[in-house]
Image (cartoon, rainbow, N blue to C red; front, side, top):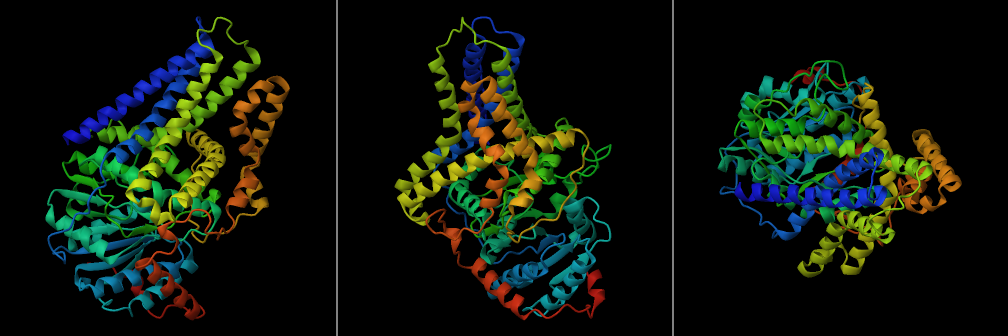
Length: 580
């Protein structure tokens, strides 16, 4: 833990230094020798936003400075403990769910570890037709190798507590039959060897309460999805190493593709129902960070291991679906402000909760800062006694750009020497894709800033975003649908452009990277949602992965072709079957 504490201190101290330095330059430029309270207000906004940018970048630098972690092998080939593989579902594609479970089960059977792992489908589906199909598909699942006595399904009548309540219900009713639980999402897929490795790691370390893998995104089809898939595949190993080094034994829990010790989870992770109504009160939505903090509070080790390969998930294929998911996360993270003073939490757990909170609050902070600067440009003359040359503002802009871009460019530079770039098509192809990722993410960033700002405002005003079912089919967004979702962005962006050109034309060039993409939001969202099959951009190892992903795709395609017309289930009593 000494190294982790040192890295934490260095990252926070470095971010504070950059924040104070940037704030000092900003205040001198906007306020000169005699700044007024409005100048101080703008500077405080800027300094706070820069701190969190700098701290996020420090994670990348730590990951770059540290040597790639070597994969750790367990001492035994087959775990001794029994693991329940939990797949919570909520109005999901039943064929895809069945296919994922089936191929993971077949792999475990082939490796001779089937008797150590049971599969449990935990349904919270509210649509009656989907729930009925789940039973039909579960009947099909029972015909898989060694399935009887190892495959279980149950559906709750009321999905209290959503996913966290779903897991809690299983732990309460059936957790005593198992040593560990591998928690998945409905779109999760893991190599059987990785599943076995994680269970063996739990056997080997009695203090290990939770082991988190780093999922890779697969299956992306659109421009947006493939850009996201490339970014995760290329950049996340470095940033995950930084997170793992900094978090130490108080690592994060991301809610899926992680294995937990049942006794630790049952004894430590009972979540409170917050007083008041949603969105501020009620059940905790972003439960994973809280559960990780509670495990650490009780002395359990929580570890993120980036060397655990073979962990996969699917990502949203368009920005609207991404924003819907992000809206739920925003509401959940803002609830964390009520947990910052929870008794017994460790300092770093509180800092992680604060970081999750600020990851959303910084969006309205940036928006407020931009609005304040436009207001100042319209109503205030520039300070004639400014103590800093106008050209020096480029130093400030360059510093912010470096915070955002330098970690990515350094990842590329390291990849030139360690051979990583060969997995992404070579140095030229990797650089081409990385620059394209930077351009596209820069264009879409103002749109996400507005989505997140609206989500924060809605949450503060007491508007509950609920828990919408995820769309994982990669549907194309039409221009009309995009306009319906983002007309207000176009209106705000267009109005800002008109006002700036009329009143402060010199300011337009500075704010064009924000106002122009905002005004073109429907077009950008629609275009980026379309299928993008070119291998010229965003090539990654996840384009055509072998192993479990390939098996899943083949099984799903075969199952979809042979799927009969829907009939009523012949064994409705299966719906009450629970692992015990």
